[in-house]
Length: 322
Image (tube, rainbow, N blue to C red; front, side, top):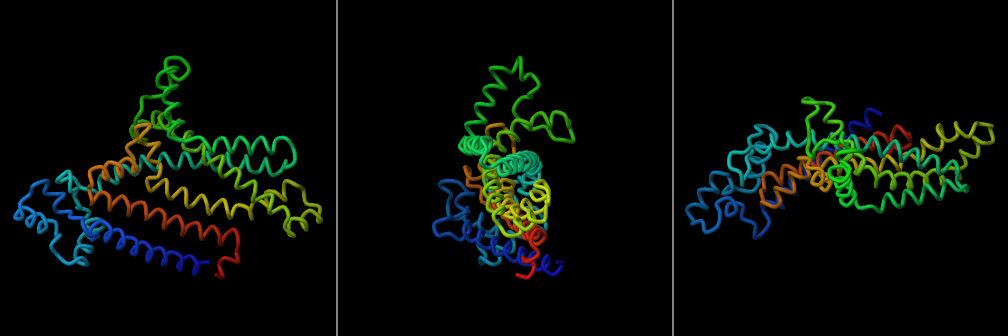
């Protein structure tokens, strides 16, 4: 198991370095893209452009530019914004990260718990009325656009019923946990719920299908022949095997959300997370911030995929021999 884990994390490092090179080339070596012109502004004379290129190292060979950029980003951490002069990129990322992590982790807890309950209940009672009802509910939840649901939620909780039923809901924004844990929790309850709704429907339906397929396998029929209780067959045999697909999807979605895919939710609820930071930097074409946020997202995607592989090895020992 240790050898398997080391090989996966070695692959993770190699993939992340490859992604960093590719992202750097896309943003700084694409034909027609001149970062110096963006920094210097419109109508900058050649002397100004040359000075900007020299000060930011853009007049040096690409491999040197890449190494300088990575050094400024990961070692000295003094990479600065091209748009907001003097504003360091890494502190911006570090300030936005707790917001996104708080949002995504809370939503993930909700969607995992309720999706497992939905999938297990539907599979255990397949053929009964509760099965199609739960699957229909899951499809409806999956079909609701999270942005629209967030706007409707804000309309109800911040305006129409705020003074009565939802007086406990704080204004839009984010309160750090260290500053006020109660306000932190109350401010994230609705974003957690809105973000989790679609994933509950998706994961519940996926788990139900996987469980139904698993119940047709020989090892489940053998467990039934041995006289094991339905509950034990479900929890100890069928669910463990079916969770492989569940874990695979979860790793990808969770990593994407940590990387900024929860942008719409952050915008709707006024949360200054990574998604919002990425959106703002794209609007301003702030290359250092874009580079940092993309690598931040890539880090979580690569890391979560390595962790998912380890979960595979735990759930199915045959994976360790691959």
